[in-house]
Length: 79
Image 1 (tube, helix red, strand yellow):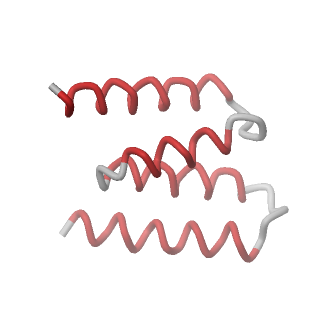
Image 2 (cartoon, helix red, strand yellow; image 1 turned 90 degrees about the horizontal axis):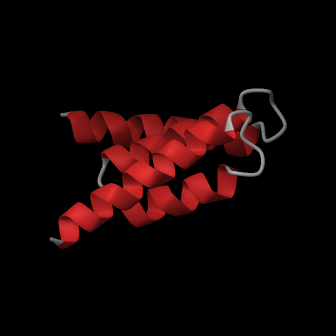
């Protein structure tokens, strides 16, 4: 099941980022954790995770694109 795969991936990315917070791939692991949250429709948590990455992620425009997409998805759900 896809949801289970995203949950498993998220757990692994989260564990990596916690165990190796200064590793060159730690910010990518945090990004992937946020992406998993988005895929699991946990949009508020995904938004918070992406917001936390804005200052440190190497490609801030990617974060802005993700945040815009989450905002759009949230507004669509309200309709």
